[in-house]
Image 1 (tube, helix red, strand yellow):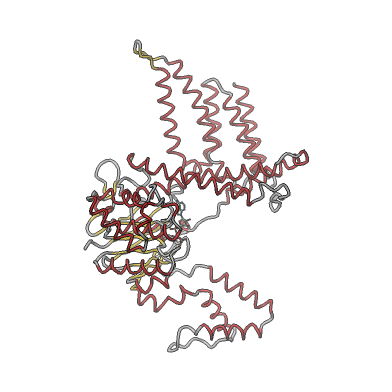
Image 2 (cartoon, rainbow, N blue to C red):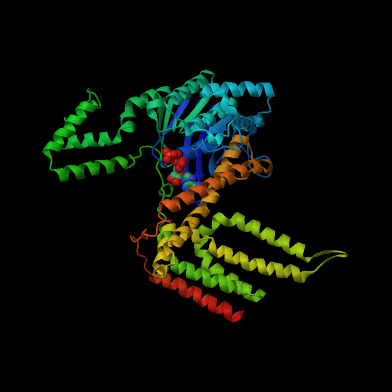
Length: 564
Ligand SMILES: Nc1ncnc2c1ncn2[C@@H]1O[C@H](COP(=O)(O)OP(=O)(O)OP(=O)(O)O)[C@@H](O)[C@H]1O
């Protein structure tokens, strides 16, 4: 039997917004030989917590231990994951059905089992047993995993985990997409896992299926633990709230309006559904239609609000802030400013010109530092690449010497490009795809008269714009999957070289699928229909701030042309 998981003041911040806490000060113990459910609203932090326990997210502060061993070790230059714990733990991420790396189901098992170095007989035995437990016919072993149905892929994800026989299972929404038989098998598997003295932490909204099986429940809210209790007592006190918050609010309103008797301390905490329906019908009959509708709407709104927090307080930084920056500026001002600066930077042929361009770019970028931060690694890689290219350009081998002129020429050309790229980086965060589409339609709509397909071009540009950040997100997802399945011990974002290629191939396949979906989206949104109307609901207006941006860019461009 392995040790319990202990989280001590575990805090995690968003990778690209370090002031945003995703988990704050989590103190929890997950008992070995027990099943713990993580419950909470959408976005409360359950997946983040599971990924943090699995070492797929770095801790900002605090510690995580399994038994007496720490999850993170700092031997050597960089923090690494504890190999024993990594091998003990199996995680199924939220979209575990879209994680395939190999061309057949059998090879998927091989990929998952590779880090364990078991014999081929043992491997075969485990594969067959896992397929049977998951209810998958053995003839599927030679099929391409992507051709299985959604539910079969879910079952396969669980089967791949089972084959590794981990001591700890971390499951994110494991019942999603499973039919009744799949859920029954999952519960039986969890039961057997626990009976063998092993532990599981399961993030779920499916209390009907999993609460009867659970030993403990931890309620996550706003990245903090709101409550942790034995499952039986939690179910007695809260199951009704979790299962039917809307109905509970409606009952409270019925009581307040005198349509339902007040709750009696010794009576049932909850009326039977039939009784509640009868009370609602009585209230409807007595209340004018509009007032009843308003009351129902209020009940629904209240039901979506998170409940008050009784334990660890949430700081304002843990709450998601709407991206106001993206709707602050007119995309036309930003694009015009970018084009003015980028063109005049590329015209510079002297170091003095580049230095002035760098100073002007810095003036524009310093207020946007938070939007540049996610790109820092890419910028560093580009600078290293420029240096290498310059050295190669200057090197002569016969005889060995270094010619500074071509080296500096290359350095100058690529430095200008770096400034242009850096100015473009924050643009993604400063505009939304819809606003870009609207700005193109509003500016060039008059060309429709001359049969120029402005709407179609605007929609295409917009979707491409939307596609670019998805590339990075999808890569990050595959890195996480490769990390978890390959049992890497490096810090979660840096994949060991040997795992890069296996992650690359499915990533490219996934991009192709996304491109197909984009083409479908284009058609669905009217790209092939000339009668389709542009998005008229939004009217962009040039503000004083937009004007200032353009004036700053025009002045900078004039200076750059002058010194060129
Ligand atoms: N890399 C990130 N950068 C910024 N915010 C993030 C990042 N990853 C997660 N979040 C935010 O952290 C919060 C918690 O997300 P998480 O996926 O853990 O929620 P969850 O409880 O699993 O939700 P669900 O029930 O919908 O699956 C969300 O508000 C999410 O937007």
